[in-house]
Image (cartoon, rainbow, N blue to C red; front, side):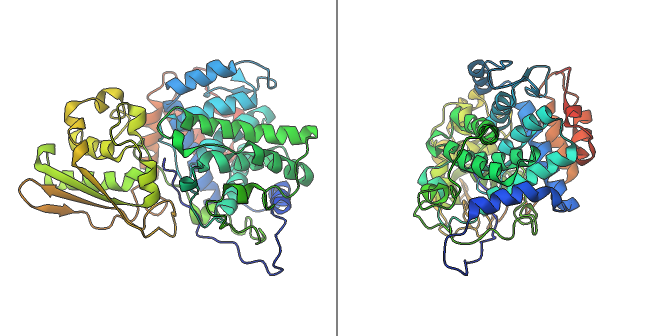
Length: 475
């Protein structure tokens, strides 16, 4: 999404019977340290694998984006300053420390804003780069990699479910803020860290958490994803070395949850006593993006394209467009007159214009050249945004439903009606063939990558004896 959207879990922790703050950080640490004993059902594993497929696809497609080059230059990719170079950079020949590889790979995966969404953010674009880099260092199995993803997702989901307000409206980028905690949890599991180490690692990760919504539509947004992935690894490494943090960093009155809460309307009281029972990904799921721009635009794009195609409309046929969206969505879509492809990712005006003029809103449209076209820019002034105040109980960053009305020059009005879920949403999912189609399209944008082979490997990720098998030496 970039919206950060999400499939935010409807699960809300139950009220604390004792009326006192639960020892959340300790409970999270205990869960991570003992997660190997919990059975992972096939449907939960499959959702994690979907996250790997989608993220690695978008990482490959985004690997030549300018922000990735800047991060590689800044980190000195290949440097061993942060540790031995045991992790692959962008699944290619170049190797780096796990922290550096995770940062570069995370920035690439999020650079196009084409990666999956859930939990008010983009969980896979942080979890997958962190897990992939650390698992390569450890030579972990595919099964361990899948469980690590679910562990990171589980902690992330529990934290998100405790907030009643909006992190976006407070100014926090949830992918970066929660991502570093989730990445630390996943890496704690991979390393089989004990409970005390995990508790300290989560506390350290809480102090790494950062990322501003104000930076949406710039290179800093994908930088956030790589930063969170890398810092999750670093937090656990520092804990392993003996660095300490407060044992109640998540729930303390001056801790993580309260610090990032919009109106201090956050549940620090309830125990986290349902972790992995069942796995939260089975409820919250993952939503796969069909368009490489903020997820807040996707329902509107679906609506405009459907009306355009159904009625064989041309841009000149349309006098005005009304899009009904949510408050947080409107806040994120700040670029009303974008001048670059990057800015256009957070512009509902561009999303509607591209759908009307180009008949598509894809990687080929999200370019500076398309944004600058006169016939595209002429559509911007046609859009009126209205607000639906009713929030979605499943995706709190969105309205309950979006809606599109096109007023035509002949006086007629075309109305989509309520659009509840975009195609690709966890409640309206892509087929495996559609997922593969997106992956292969992403892979085709990079030389030296055998997309078919890589997709087949990822589809059977749980069965791989070693994550090293995913390395693409010719890339």
